[in-house]
Image 1 (cartoon, helix red, strand yellow):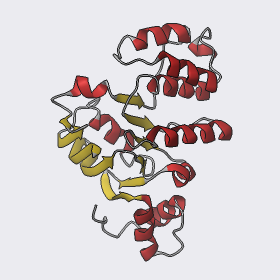
Image 2 (cartoon, rainbow, N blue to C red):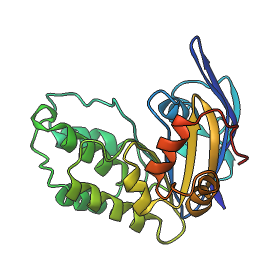
Image 3 (tube, rainbow, N blue to C red):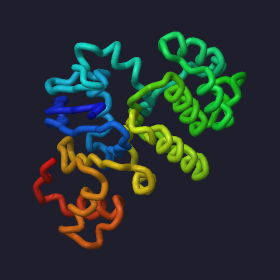
Image 4 (cartoon, rainbow, N blue to C red):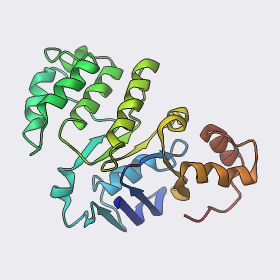
Length: 248
């Protein structure tokens, strides 16, 4: 079963267009969304969440039309997007108390587990946290209401290597039972080498290829055998952009 299906998702701005993006995210998968700065990764994530209203396209989550069942779908989403700011003078405890009221299936035990794991003190104020700690707090909230689909924008950005490794292990454990999935954008392609099962690559708002990771790498190795990692693929592809996009 696909937890997320995106078909012909389009969002037009005066100087940029996300153009007919298509991909499927099956249950039990970790999909990395890659592309250079300005490729449209954040636009894609915000469009499929209706945070910016797309001009056209179809989105299904959990087998439902997302735009017709948005409130119900979002109860099952864990979301962390870049640029999300918490009120700086509020304590984490106060923010958590407000957040939990929005979710029918808030899991206090899970919340306390992740707060402990990430070494976050509830009596601290947001302005006392480093940028990395703010990211960890946002992730702790996203993991604490029994979500089925997690959508993250640069979730490992600003984290130290040890915490990044812990987070990737959490990602893998979340999808291990085959009922949940993760979609996340990142520039740290080595993280995807470690944990991703699927890759979706976009360039200048257009899909290059969306596929299982092994097939994704093999496809680019046919062009250049030196493409052995996702970083190799991106470097090679962005320097040789004249070829057409691959079929999905």
